[in-house]
Length: 113
Length: 112
Image (cartoon, each protein chain N blue to C red):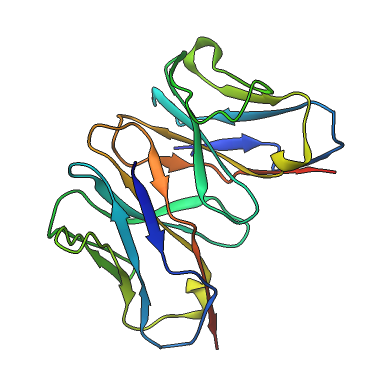
């Protein structure tokens, strides 16, 4: 069974550019989460999808971040325009049910220069 | 709000040494507790978990016991190996919540 996969693994962009991160959850997992770890600090929650609906987006830092999950399958996280402080590792996770073990992807390391 | 505190690293040990990484939490109600590990170049992997007080999670020689009285979930291993070098994250999910709350991570380096 394939795990959670994320693309790209690394991205280096200039300030002001746009970047789109993609996450493919484990098949059948309705719950999909985005997290990020900035500069070696805590891994912080960004948002949670249940199927195609945003269940909780309280962790989204500002309106430069847009997450979608069309059809309740894969998800994208777009940052537009990117700022220096957006650099970090963005993790995606999925789970069968809420409040249970979540399976994480390898993460996308985003560097904004 | 909910939070997780764990010892800052890096922690450097010799092979076969005893490992303890402290983790304490603040949460309302009865959260589930987890240890995740990130090996170099890889994603987060669940190492072990405990869902109620006094439960002990164990995997790959690692253990952690859910101590409600001290709000702790310390990770231990009796004899570490070089292959255990990684970053370890303590985390919780509140029983009414939907997302994980992570600690800052502890980097462990095991020297041969």
